[in-house]
Length: 250
Image (cartoon, rainbow, N blue to C red; front, side, top):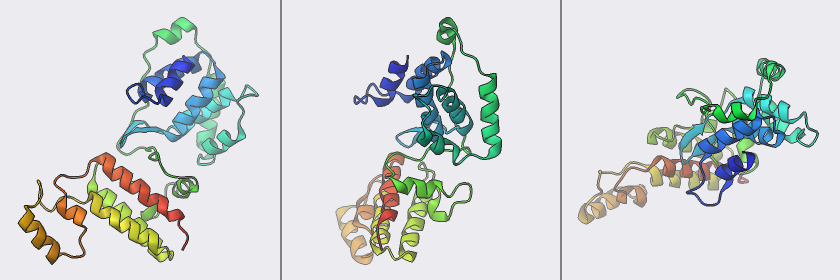
């Protein structure tokens, strides 16, 4: 069960990767009290999982901590780095709730685990969302450290709304400029042209495009030649590569 779950998460073949199915198999193995599965499940619930720009598994710090504590009963899985990663953003109420869940937990039998219908954690429009993959090293920590009171440039945008992503990228560019990181600011502003809505759905005819570009020399040629709105995945990718630039030195 653990190997099936890990395969669904980590398979190089994209046609095999299926985080939802991987979660179900890891949960079954965890319910049978297999520490390796419990440890992996805790990491998944701590960060959540995205497929493209869609949240498949929402972060759940309380259950992440619960499963880690169960795994950590084994000396081979009591990893202080994982504990720090999970528990640092949690408050005392959440940690106490996780401890209560551990105290009340008991393993299932094989038949019980196989017979269970395992639902994914509910994803709500207003609940916590995973940080998209691709944020590099300490950059992710800089965004996470904002907690519940992020600055405008630290906010995770709604990747299904172009105006939300453009506002977030603009905020990062302004933050970089205030910090003396001109290269970061310029780079992020160029990304706006890659996700801005087309000047006209379907694109401009060649003659109108030449006139439009001559009348708007500061406007991105990418935006002027775009025929369709950027997809949520394109918007997310542009936000990620901009966000990574906050690590630039002034």
